[in-house]
Image 1 (cartoon, rainbow, N blue to C red):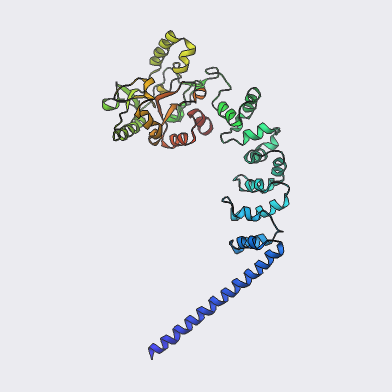
Image 2 (image 1 turned 180 degrees about the vertical axis):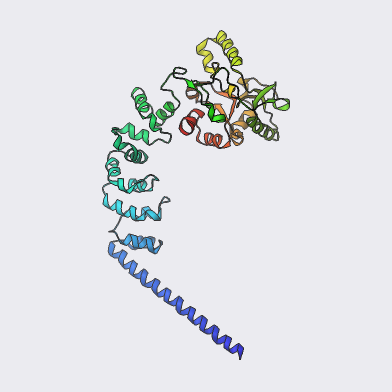
Length: 389
C-alpha cells in the first residue's frame, strides 16, 4: 500500500515538473518569436537575427530600443565587446553615424570615457585619430587654455606622458620635428632637453633603493649608504661591498646561474665619493673629459656610491669589454630581472642614460620594477621620472 502511494506521489511530482518546464518552454518560444519578429521589423536580416539571439534577453531588449544599426553585429562579435556598454554603443553609433563606428566603439571602451563629455569627444574625433589623446585633452586640458593641435594630441596619447612636462615636450618638438611623439616623451622624461650635468640637482635619497643617480642627480661627497656588507669568497673576484638586500638577491641569482654551469662574480660594488673621484680623474688624464664622460661617472654622479650596483665578471675573469660575449651575459640578459636586477646601461639606450653600453653593470631595484623595465624595454631614467619622481 505504501509503495503504491509513493508511486502516485512521484507521478504527481513528475507531472508538476513537466507542466512547469512546458510553461517555461512556451514563454521562451513566445518571447523569441516576438523578439524575432521585432528584430525583423527593425530591419535586421535572418543572419543578423541569428547572431543577436545568442545574446541575453536584456541585451536584446536594449537593441530593440533603437533603430536598425548596421554595425551592431561587428560590435557584438568584437573581442572588445562589453555587454554593459551595449546601450552606449547603440546610442552613439546611431547618433553620430557620420563618424567611423570603430572610433566610437573604441572611445566608449576607453577606461577614462565620460558620457557627459561625448559631444566634445566627437568634435575632436572629427579632427584627430588618437582616442587616448582626445579623451585626455577633453577631460584634463580643454579648460586650461592649452591649444589643441596634432602634436599636443599625439603627446597626450603617449603612455609615459607627464602633465607637468607638456611645455617642455612642445618646446623640444619645435627643435626636433623629425621625431615621433613617443621619442619626444622618452627624451624629455630622461631630461635630454637639458645638457648633461647642466641642470643637476641632489638625488632624493629618501627613496632608498629606488634613488636615481645619473648625470642629472648627484650624491653629496659625504654620502655613505646604510647596510653595506662585505662580498667575498665565490661571489667576488676581489673584496667588494654591496647593500645587504641587493647582496642577498645577488647570491640567489649567482647560485641559480651556477646550477646551469655559469659563474657570476662581483668585481666592484659600492664606491665612495673619493674613490670615484680618483677613478674619474685618472680616466680624464688618459682620454680627456669628453671621452671619459661617456664611460665613467663624475664624482657624486656614480650610482655605485648608492651601494645597489655591481660590475660583474665570470670564472675566467674576462674584461668588461669581453663580458658581452660570454654565456653569463646571455643568461643575465634574460634572467636578471627575476632577481630584481636591471642592466643599467643597455645597448641602443646610450643617448638616454649618458653612458656607453655596459654589459657588466647591474643595478638592484626589486623584482617588480625590474620586471616592468624588462618587459617594457625602458631605462631606469624613464621609469623613475614617470612612476617614482
